[in-house]
Length: 114
Length: 112
Image (cartoon, rainbow over all chains, first blue to last red; front, top):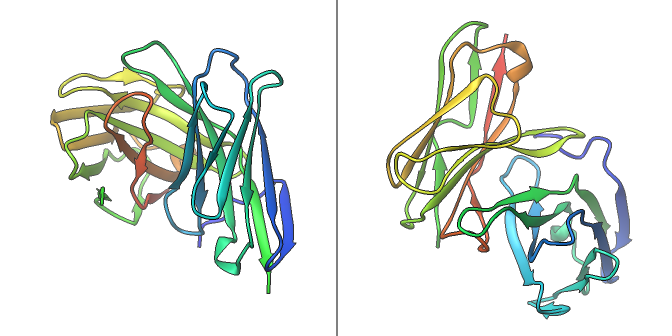
């Protein structure tokens, strides 16, 4: 399969642990953020998003935290499972209203051991 | 569910060939995007389109062009393929700005 994981920071956890993946974003004017999961050989899959008027948002087993003061985003995965092993990307929305684009971070590889 | 399909999963072309990568989405999304993904470099935006017949350059448009004649279809064209265009190409669509992008499975292009 594809190796998008070369040269990436890696987080190794045991099954059942909670995982925290961090991301620093670049633009203080960004007002929309997304986390994606990419498994080997597949396209990125949307996990959760958050807008800048919030500092926390929860989904199923996942929580995203946004700290605008230090331009930091984190993804928390509860009770991590082997199926969560993948590369995780954060993305920030940049550009003028009307047509803006996402800028992606380089990604973090999450490895979950049974 | 949103479905974004790409014409090929794997493609091998020779240097100098003209290459067409096709992307189709079935959710009537306004915006469509082409990215390339390389180890260590992440996803980089090549071109995007926010409406039929409209296109905008992304971060790395050199060597590429695009076509959007119908809302559901966005094509990436490599006018004269070169070895440095060997990469994974990902198409995405979204309903508009400030909404999530849905990705296709990718096309792994090798230029020899």
